[in-house]
Length: 180
Image (cartoon, rainbow, N blue to C red):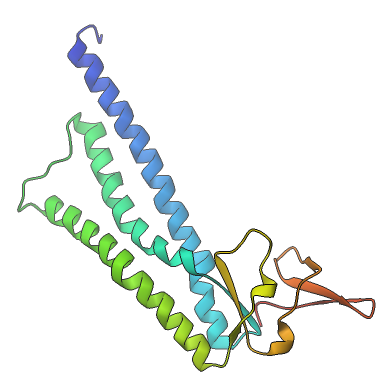
């Protein structure tokens, strides 16, 4: 069936495109999940004025991933179906879509992510939150904890299954609820 080198090259190209599609899909889904599960809750906690708020600043950089991964998935699907490189004509809708997704991704990384991180920090400062490096788990230097009261800043003895920090005081285990 694939006796000619051209047939083998086409199969190899399509398999690489399929692998690219799987990887880009996984990265896009993972980054979207991470943004929904770890970045969006920050603003709900700010709204509720939670006692402690964990802000994973590096996660703001993931704002760039979904648009570029969507463009990559479409280009890979095109390559699988046609066996050709994705290169739409310059004025076509697909070319505009591809360029738009790339621009969106760059703007998200260069403008939106830093702006969101700065706005979050300014909001926390305006609400009299202070940083608390003591609440960090070992090995999680990229996360920052903000507390609404200095008494909520302590070195935890343990953590709950939800990741809330706990301390033993007078034989009682007291845990800081990170949602309220």
